[in-house]
Image 1 (cartoon, rainbow, N blue to C red):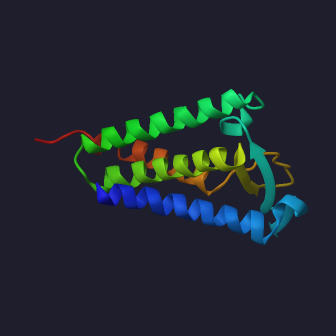
Image 2 (cartoon, helix red, strand yellow):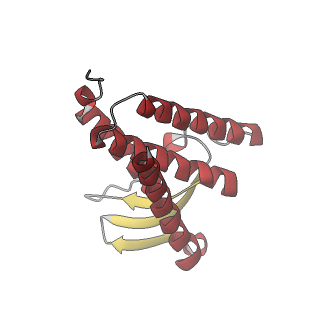
Amino acid sequence: MGRLILISLVTLGVDQFTKYLIYYVLDLETVRRMVVIPTILNFHLAWNEGINFGLFGGGSELTRYIWIALALVIIICFYIYAFQQDKSWHLLLPIGLITGGALGNTFDRVIYGAVMDYLNVTCCGINNPYSFNVADTAIFCGLALMLLFGNKYSKSK
């Protein structure tokens, strides 16, 4: 299970390191928006108090702690599931990405009170108002891999 914890911690580390660079080095709090690749990629700082796309956000301080508690329960459930399965990379990589991403966003909620989102992808003249971060990407990729390798998760005896 050391490999699973390592994948989670590396994902958490990459997420938090990029957020540090964006917030403190590039000072995106002041700049607010920075074009990285014209018409494709921007850094656009957004604070997400809710879940995906800010749903259920803007609540009280209690809501923040509910999201933190829920994320920790989900992370624990993923770890329990992983401990009960065969320890192949088909399982460890996706769960490590999901739990590491969830830890990254949970860390933001604990430290800042909201999740720091900053990646904004646009295309074809469409103005996308939503931002995301490395943790969100890791969670998405982990879930996609779980769907792709889903039939490999059953225990073989």
